[in-house]
Length: 198
Image 1 (spheres, rainbow, N blue to C red):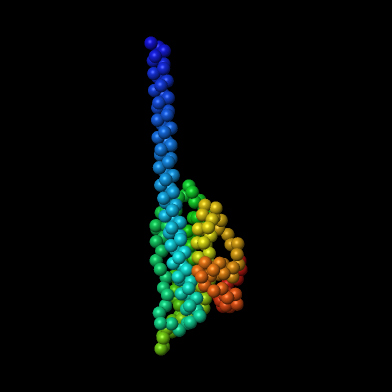
Image 2: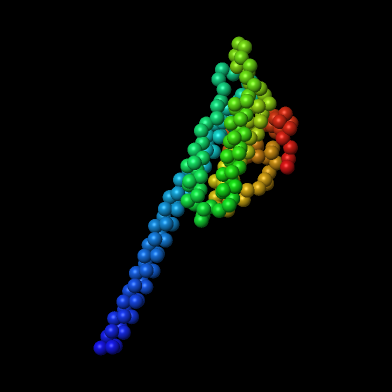
């Protein structure tokens, strides 16, 4: 009888251990599946931002080349709360570089929004935009595009550091945006904005 009781106890403990292990594995599977969905949403959001900044870069380059225009480009809304929530849920996968990317993007967007709001606009027989503000917008928008490209290319291996000169960053942004890269044109923009290498 004691032998049967010991076997029953052992079988019960073994069953409980197996059930606990399987429950843990099932929860882990569900969590990984949820994290994978969130990761797809996160990178889709970054890709959407990149595409919208492609349009912005084309618009501000056009405004710089043709300061007398019929309409002006405006900044678009970015749902940083949504991006932040995705990022917070993905902390186990993304880590510090993506949090730093978030902070840098938020700062860069504040800078570009300020540049849009403070552009000197002269209205006579048309709209004339200040070339300095347009030049700064070109540089800042290129930096944003560059950071988004790096985040999308390197994903969980992202490192936030400046590996390229401002001219190289603009070139990368132009190539990605299908804009012609005229080195002397963009050197003039960097000279006008007095953008120096760190």
